[in-house]
Image 1 (cartoon, rainbow, N blue to C red):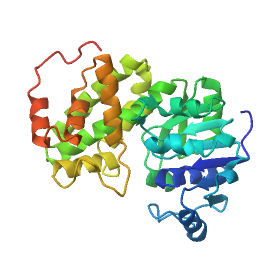
Image 2 (cartoon, rainbow, N blue to C red; image 1 turned 45 degrees about the vertical axis):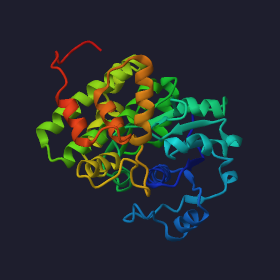
Image 3 (cartoon, one colour; image 1 turned 135 degrees about the vertical axis):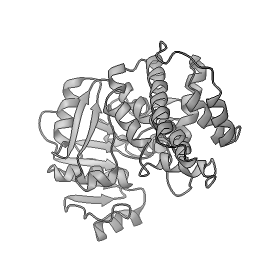
Image 4 (cartoon, one colour; image 1 turned 60 degrees about the vertical axis):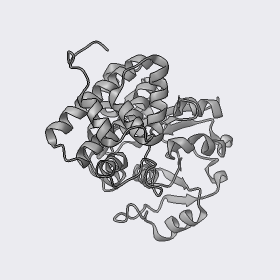
Length: 331
């Protein structure tokens, strides 16, 4: 893509999709923001603000819709739905997937163990998938607080062009050609954030959090190495950067859910009113880990708690009882 698109479509009118729609509008693009709910689309057009982001009005160039046909003339599509509903949602837009498609969902499809870029290519072999990921919260982006993320594609040059088309002074997008690594970091960190939330809920303190994040990063590297992700990618924004943010801020649904688990104030099924991507992703990660013989003790402990096979206290006890070993063991 050599020139700015005239029209950007965002599929998914949650907080993150709305923030990305507003970012594209501020960059000068005409934006169509699709919601599955006609009531939600009508509300956004009428009130010009999202309930989860009430402080900022939407730009006039953002038009919400519930009609998939309204996205047909878009030059660029951004997918911002929950990962587990991505396949079903994409099938609604099979008529317009023959153009760049940026995946802003973070997760692994639990039914197949596939990353969302693979799901995109299965639904539409004509699509050219890109992935946007990194340490970012919708509210921060909406309020123009400085944020940096990564946009990955199969080729670096087109990813860089797309990054330039959507970047703002306060929303810096770096480019990458490690499509797998950028997705992997964004998915796995949600599972690890639940573990860090549990530690926070148990009031283990800052020293324990630092140690847990460090060991969690080691698991991310081990998982990424086994799947072929680039190590440098996982040390960047979409890996370590996103992990640190998600494992330390209550704005993170996964971290907040973990806190509630640690306080015995939540059930393993998660809150019904919001998406906690780490719950289904934990199952996908552990299926892949089992198939490859990978030792991911923190991810395993989270999955065991979510399955009801261990209590929080039992999971913590198992982790603390693991044999001591050299810290910098080979991946």
